[in-house]
Each structure stands twice: as structure tokens, then as C-alpha cells.
Image (cartoon, rainbow, N blue to C red; front, side, top):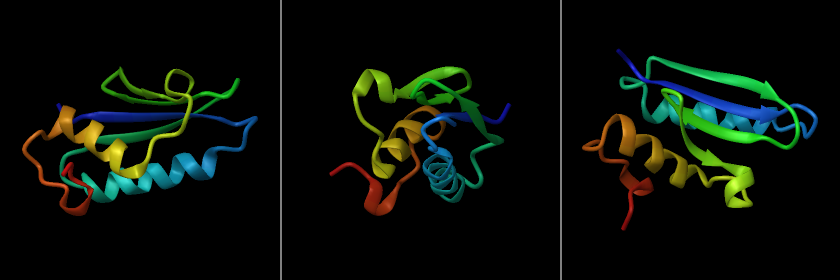
Length: 91
């Protein structure tokens, strides 16, 4: 089964563009590894990212948004641990 990523974002906060940009970054980076990427509208300041239902980033828990590089690393570690990320890889 191919992995599914969900980005849940707050519609009240108007975070759709941020979520869509993050989705584009992930789809470009993991074009052969991802089976699905869903943008899920929410409320209450939510911005959470899940891989196959497992929470990998929560704005509420971290107190900030993820950096693109950080999010790619978190997703990679779960779906394709051996995949090099080029300039987005850890040093």
C-alpha cells in the first residue's frame, strides 16, 4: 500500500495556501513514493501533518509551523528512509 499524507489546516486562519504549498513540496519531492496527499479543512488554529494516520507534526504542540526542509525529512523518515533529499537533507 502506498503512503497517504494528510495536511489538516485551519480555514478560519486562512492557512489553505500554506497547506497547499507544503503539499506541493511533498508531492514534488516524493512523486514516486506517495499514493495520496489530502488537504483537510479544520478550525481552531489547527495545522497538523499525518502519514498513514500517524501525527508527525502539530503546530499546537510545536508552537510554530514546520519548515519545508523539516517536513520533508519527517515524511522521508517514515516512507522512504534511504531516499536522499539533496539540499534538504540533514547535515
